[in-house]
Length: 566
Image (cartoon, rainbow, N blue to C red):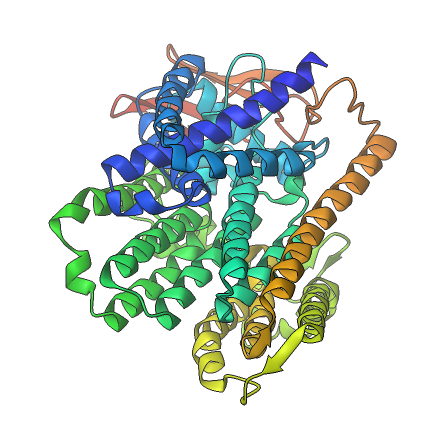
């Protein structure tokens, strides 16, 4: 029972500390964001902590001392937040929401990559100062994600690494708070438009499709942020706002894009939305003003630390793009291998291989000239893409039918074609880019496939007029249903984990970790490198843990360097 109390206490503690950093950010970096609700402040805090974490790792491991000091600042910021009595309602609402969603945090089996490198990568950050050349450990260590850096600051006595999966849970809770609060407020005052129905549909979509926290990895959390990115973009494009509001929401949009991009570099392409917003509102010069210098500096610091970390891990600023591999350092991954891995990732995303099958064509031939399309349709479209399409279609159909049954009267035009075409244009462009270059669901596929249906349904529903009371009641029911589905699907999942994996949830809430014996494969006066004995995964064994055994150690800029030798 004590483990459950500590587990739940730490989740609340980390959430409140994260919100505290959001409060510190808006008070010191961008005061325009101070009117944001607690959900957005949570996401801002998540982003801010990740940036801090990426900087401090060059000076100190994220051990107990480092993290306790960090969270003292977080709690101070949270105290500043709740000190304002206007925030009491939001605080209570979020606390209840966390309690309802808490079932999702109970995970026994995480995704396969968790044991391979997610857990090990993060634990290495908690136990060691930054090490140059960790890309030599395994392919997983070449893939940077700020989520690992956020998780590393959750390393505290007793709970240790047992909440290294909880970041996606926080993002999911903050997302639900933002959408639920906006929907209930809009329904009360009957502010119903395209964005209102967009929020309902993405809330249901996320709680149904992304219900399993243990499968999020670094991919699905970024896709949840992508839905918020498009929400803010549509709001800025379609709604008439004063200049201060535009600057506020553009700042939020920038934070979310940089946050998603720090999890997966492919999301940097969504920065194209920013000049569209600023040019549309004639605010490009007014955004680049003196009071925003610190805010812009933090954003540049975020992308800089991402690129520098990538370079120090692999010798490439954006691995696996060989064009970004500058110079030839002792820790650099050979350009031939980088190119080979780039082809491999594209080959994999285009269904060139998977469990139990491999295409007969060579990978460099397979990925060219649409040779891959037929196999991708057979192996990936059915049933991964088709399931998402059908699921989204079902959600949209149910929502449309339900609201139509409540219709009081209808406006003359049934569909807003101009708005639909404007709203659908960019998502379609991004969808085409996804399909041509990396058509795997984990690379943004879930959201990009669902968005056209969600946008179409939102435009269609915008034209109906519903009685205020019916609108509020129906919206509340949809919110409760989406949360209930999340709860029930996780209840079923936990029951399966209890039966299949013998998950003794009564005794302990912690996820499964295999005990791994390891051996020392390289050593100097500053560091020891370990490797698992007769095992294919490091799990939570001694760090740094490498799958490659032919390694040497050196020093560069006062940091340990690890590199391969023949």
